[in-house]
Length: 157
Figure 1 (cartoon, rainbow, N blue to C red):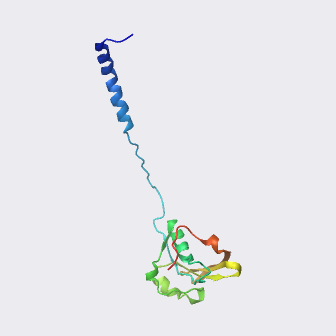
Figure 2 (figure 1 turned 60 degrees about the vertical axis):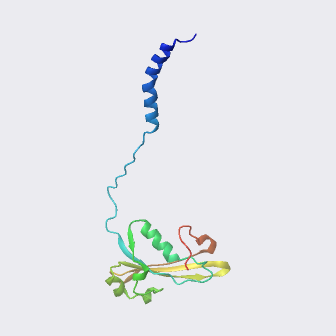
Figure 3 (figure 1 turned 30 degrees about the vertical axis):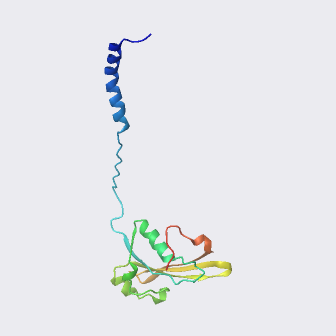
């Protein structure tokens, strides 16, 4: 059974609004609105001093840069730029606390990377509180050098 030509026109007039609505729906866009209602408004000022390196055992890994990147990435810390550091001590005994406190840093991280057996490295670091002039933490860890490669950092030059 075939429809007469005037029936096709009537059917077209009825389908036309449906076709337009269908095409418009295909171009509709969703909007995502994210509203941050709380967060850290006053990040803790900290200085992460470049660590003493164990060349070539460390493979060019800048441990201090990795630490600084991770602390800043948390949003809870604001790190001092390296070019603004008054010195580059690698032990807590060599830190002149008053100099760092004058720059507004509440904490200073210093450390050392050393080569140990079979291509492994050891990382020793100290966290100093400039407000109390105390060493808050002393830590040491070791790992195979190949496990220390961090994909989000570039090798030190």
